[in-house]
Length: 270
Image 1 (cartoon, rainbow, N blue to C red):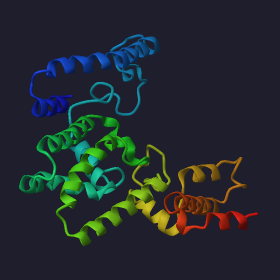
Image 2 (spheres, rainbow, N blue to C red; image 1 turned 120 degrees about the horizontal axis):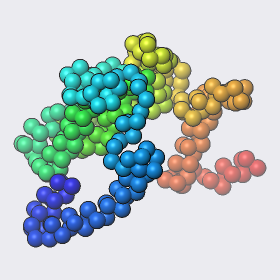
Image 3 (tube, rainbow, N blue to C red; image 1 turned 30 degrees about the horizontal axis):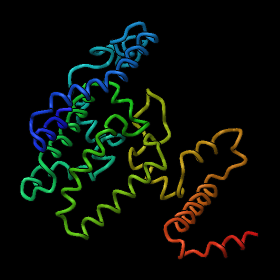
Image 4 (cartoon, helix red, strand yellow; image 1 turned 90 degrees about the vertical axis):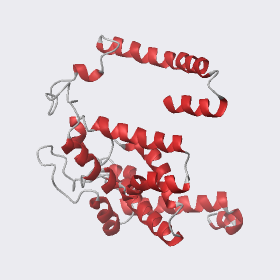
């Protein structure tokens, strides 16, 4: 909201900002009122968060239902934990740290946009440094800081634009490979889900190891292959490979129809 006000004021002048702010607030009032009504009907109070009625769990005795003051241990875990740290999960985001210095020299991203991107990311980082349940990401991988990804990526792009082409290609290939592996294998705990034994496995290296040793995977196929009703019907490796081949054919048909003789392909299956 603050960014929108500053942006509009710079481009169109201050007159009219207050009126547009009221219009925005009026538009947001309806959805917010629905949320308050839902919380009142579900929990008995429109303004208290659902966590107020949450039964006691581990860490809920710290602060207000597990939300206390920022803690250095949580901040370092959010940044560098080997299972869910922001910079261990996506080393590409380390470039966002130097974005203000690069942007100061070349001004690749307008100052207001850069401040907004880094400010939103820092606010999320600070808030979740207060949330004790941050530690529960040990078997799911990074979750809480996911909303910061698009904002950090804009800052990263401003740095990539000034790097040599070979460096950009190398960083891009490595980043896509890491992200793809983590999307295909969503387990960073070595297969352990026991809260009393979270420090197992290789963390973010587990998905990479699994993909390179067991082949390409799809979470939906993996889940179905582990269910008793479908275990004997689905070979996860074959099903995944088949879906990737079909996707590749579909891409060729849509993007480069001339590269694939569709008529000949159809006649081959008759």
